[in-house]
Amino acid sequence: MRYGVIAFDSTHAAIHAEKRLKARCKVSMMPTPRQITASCGISIRFFPDDLGVVREELAALGSSRLYAIYGIADDGSIHPV
Image 1 (tube, rainbow, N blue to C red):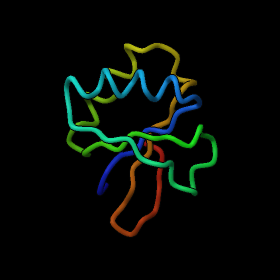
Image 2 (image 1 turned 90 degrees about the vertical axis):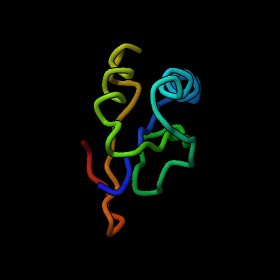
Image 3 (image 1 turned 135 degrees about the vertical axis):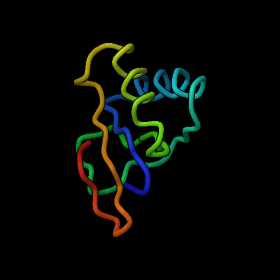
Image 4 (image 1 turned 30 degrees about the vertical axis):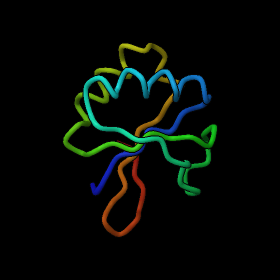
């Protein structure tokens, strides 16, 4: 995985998650890749080494229906993680 992407169902959830994640790892907001259709259009990009921290922080936020985590491979393909 070259980098990870968290896609959200709402902009509010994306902003709230970004605030939590920034306290523990380097993340950045980005437009959701076109291949990911179930999203509000805003995603968070993170480094693969931070996947464990990302999962911990998102679990602390509550409902897993609000987001989905994807890995972007070197060839540009996207896979759920």
